[in-house]
Image (cartoon, rainbow, N blue to C red; front, side, top):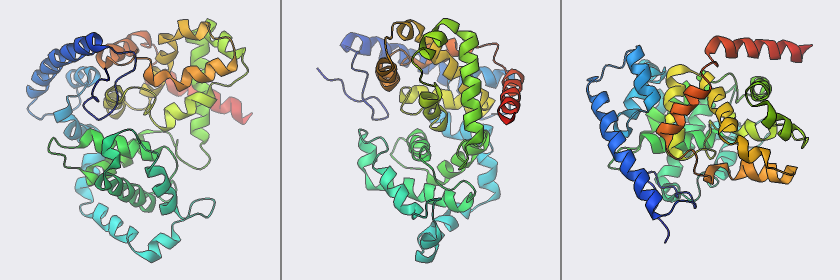
Length: 339
């Protein structure tokens, strides 16, 4: 018997049977009640503190998420200081003269590229068959191109915007495109230039990640290296899409909670833990095709479905990967690359 879709409209893992589904949903309801009570006690005070950091690491309840994200990132302040700008940008994007001048690096119309990618964004999710969702995605992405022309549009941003729209959607179905636009700007600013044309920082971070895997799970790294395929082939998507379509959707949101609060070091901690979590399976692989299949099927393996337990172990298993350590590794790798 096929289980109904989860709360955000995505399928459950094929490995889940009715008993697993019941155990998970029952545990989640209890955990949610506890989390909501803790966030209620804050009375809307989201000033940075050790208490808030601990709560964010445990995950932000759905009903609080948009307000907390706006508060702990630059998004809320930017939106207040630039009232009406998003509407102005979308109005400009509706003008033919503006659209004709919006070209990507290959000379193609950016709006045409965006429209193609909209249809590839969460095609299995019912929300992304609705015109209002697709129109809002297009408006946000086009407005971002005007606002940050040095970045423009690149693949991966569609998944980020789609995730933001789902994550911030009100219970009555209302979408919050302006909030999503400013949250997109905040996320891009948190990342070290991942979405520029050259992607220099992205390539550097993939090399740093490779070194972290070599140090953290050396046997697994040795096995994978034998296949002659650089990990960068698979990990690039993790960083560009911020684990969307790699981890279950609600686990992605939990990762983003900490990303907004603690910065991009979280991406390394999650990316390294993925290899720690799956080291037994990786050691059993026999050939490159098996490796490629493993990464392709990560989304469905079910191991990251319990986001509370998953994130608890992320912080436990990667506790040495603090900000200064990551920045030192980045600088070292960048200097090696220049030489």
